[in-house]
Length: 502
Image 1: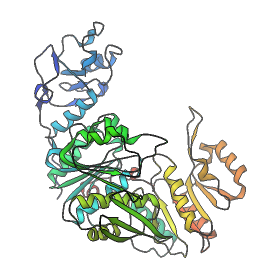
Image 2: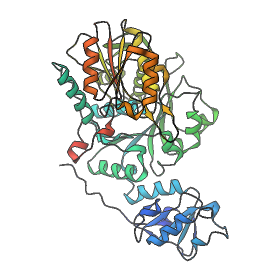
Image 3: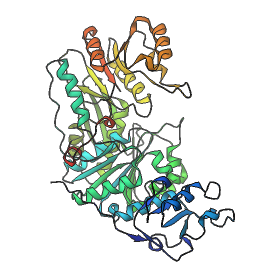
Image 4: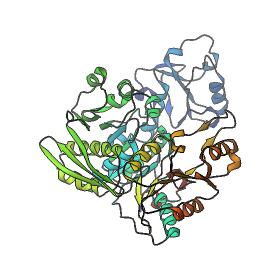
């Protein structure tokens, strides 16, 4: 039976923030805290994320709701215009966002200090790398938890998917794949991550792999969590400077003194980033100057073969998930495995055993003589889909039959969030799933542009059936982000057993 009796541990603000400035008191007790003033309950501490001297409404509402004390940013401490802080205990800190995260961890008895936590940051591929590393730890005898923006779970052995006999069983299989994913936990809010880390301590986990998004870094959501190791995945230098971002926030600063950092050696490294790293550094990439590097030898619809080199060791890697990006993710996992003194042969064997990863393009076993791919994660942008389509196009001689959701349309801005490259097939077909009345202008424009190469369906299963009926042996069927089966956000977990078992 999985335990879930998590209790809060009251603490004193002075002990948690010894360098803070206190007003109207010398210290106060924290039993619970919130940053949303409207949800404050009597006796709770309110953490003001914004400057109350500019907008005092949050503090005034918190006081009205019965807040026991207020935590605000130190630089706004002595503004005479801010009368709302009079006659109530006030603690002034440098960063209220970080203070809130630290309080959440402390209230749950600092579970991060009882676990070996591996942080995975980067522009894309964080979730895939997290699952690869978590599976690596699990297969080597460590009871391992995983925290991603899709949820929390404990990694167990991954069973091979069965072979469906017809399209109905195929659609049922895709639904079951999603139901095996953890529950939604968007953004890894500090209180949620502290709660799930404490749950993993109770369930005797040794290690936890934690996806750390750029938003989480910018908002200091990880404050109070000591990282044993840090991994940085792929970045897009045209869109952001992840290494600069990582260097100026707490991921590197929160590493253990001997904590190892795994970096993508094909990306530009800033001098400031290197100087912030005090422990060992291991680089990976496709370039020969990286300590762990790989080369793709062969790609086909069903598998990818690459050559992995680490120092004087070389070993082939065969994966059912294809694409250059996935090779990068595997290299990151290989580099991490080497820091645990696991042999390259064992690391390769464990990575090869993974055939399904939430959010990653995967080949689905189907009763047909053409390949069928499922691309679940379109939650952030269409870029992953574009990269996956490029990979599929490189080894599919026929058409690509795309089963896609009708893009999101905002009635307020009139903007449609989609990547036009995905909807410009020269010979491919597009099967859109959704209500065309929700986005009539876009659908009409797409039909004018693509003609009979686009069809609209209200149900994903009908679209899949239509695509399968026209597919030939040389074609490929790609189901991307259709309806609700493409991401874990669709799965509403009802029990601990469902949540903690893949």
